[in-house]
Image 1 (cartoon, rainbow, N blue to C red):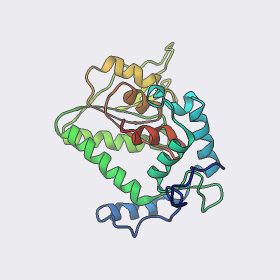
Image 2 (cartoon, one colour):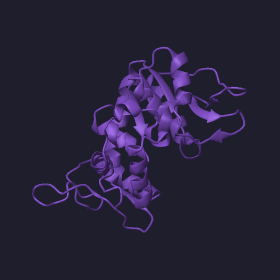
Image 3 (cartoon, helix red, strand yellow):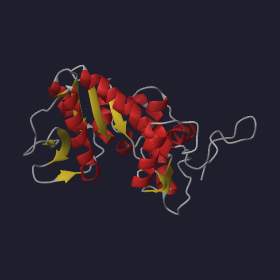
Image 4 (tube, rainbow, N blue to C red):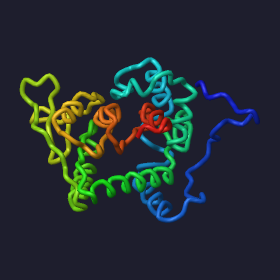
Length: 248
């Protein structure tokens, strides 16, 4: 598989390494990293393998809409090296690095640090009574997580924004599970990368101070210049690139 060029010393820009549980990162990161590792949310046997991760980088370079999440304007002139390094910086491993065949790797300490940063942003907005939109293209895996975030936002004093569902006859079906926007038809929830449902929400919601979402639900917000906390799969290189470019 192609890898980024080595630097002037001859060393790869981000050497492969194991989880950083013994790094200089201190509590509470280390504590949460251990919990994340035990829960299987990070480590060396995650859901997407190296081939899949690299294939998605190549699709991103081709402008494939299922990988850009509506952020095409923010991904201009992205090349393989930039995308590879951005994913590596996010994961703590090269996107094609495997220690378990067919399974990728995520550094639990980096994941914990990212979660704490995200939590801080949510807390800040919610505590000031900010207006928050929550949505997911992963309702099967992440709905309970987002419902918990919604309860937390309300407990902190934040205002959850909802719009009317668009179910029957809508070009872009939009439904809600509590305060979480989803792609659905009133009976079933669907996985999607499409930014259109969140564009619909944002077009009707008025002022939004923060979006907490993934896939196209988060991409639509970032493309519109709205602050967002985004959850990234290892095979979502667009998120690593726009984050490295300072757009989330």
